[in-house]
Image 1 (cartoon, rainbow, N blue to C red):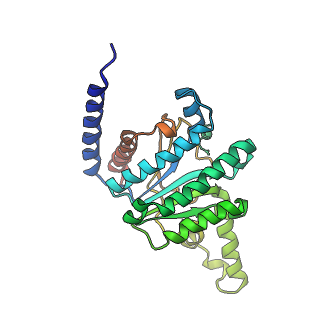
Image 2 (image 1 turned 90 degrees about the vertical axis):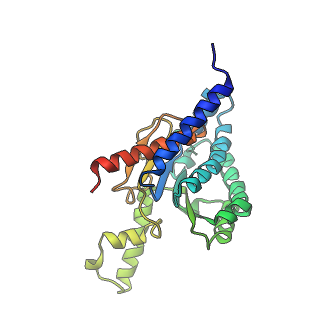
Image 3 (image 1 turned 180 degrees about the vertical axis):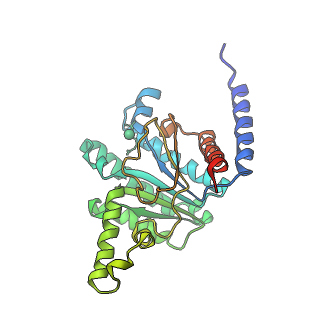
Length: 259
Ligand code: IPE
Ligand code: MG
C-alpha cells in the first residue's frame, strides 16, 4: 500500500531539517560549481513530456538553488548552463535554450528577490557566439546587478575550460609584448588572475547531476583542488536533500583528508 502523501511529506521535511542542521554544524563551502545535466532525460523518462520542456524545468530549479545558497550562506555559485559543444545540438533546441536564457536574464535582473538579496550575476564564456539579443540580455543583467556581491552567480554560457585557459594565455602574452611583464614573471597566480573567475575563490565543490562521471571541459584550471561529487538525480529533479547530501559528503571528506 502506498504511503499517504501527508506522512511522506512529514517524513521528508523531518529528514531535510535534520540534514540541514548537520550540515550547518560543518564547514560551509564558499563556492559551489554545478554541471546541471539531465534536463531532457527528466522530461522524457520521468514526466513523459517533450525533451525540450526539461530545459524550462531546469531553469526553474535555479531559483530554488539560489534560495538554498542563501539559507546556508554559500556566497558563490558557478553554473554550467551551456557549453561551446552544446551549440552543435539541433538548431531548434539551441534556439529554444537561447530564448529561454534571454528571457531568464531579464527576469533575474528585474526580480525583487535578487535586489533584496544583492545577488549579482556575471556571465563567463565566449560572447562572440551569442546572438545580439542574448548579448543585450546578458549585459542588462550584469549592469543591473554589478554592485552586488553578497551572492555571486557566474553563468557559464558558450563556455569551455580550455578556451578559458587559452584566453588567459592570450591576455598574458599581450602584456609580455607590451613590455609590462617578462616571461619569467608568469606563474600560477598570474594565470589565476587572468582566468574568467579571477575575482572569486576557486570552487570548493564541483557537483554534477544525472549520473555522468565527467568534467566535460568545465572549470579546468579552477577545479585543481576541488572536491568532486556526482549524483544520479536528473537536474530538474534535484532537491534540497540532494544538495545537502553533497555538502555533507564534502564536509566528511574535508574531515578525513583536510590539513
Ligand atoms: C543539461 O541537460 C542542459 C544543457 C546541457 C543545456 P541536457 O540537455 O544535457 O539533458 P540530457 O543530459 O540529455 O538528459
Ligand atoms: Mg546532458
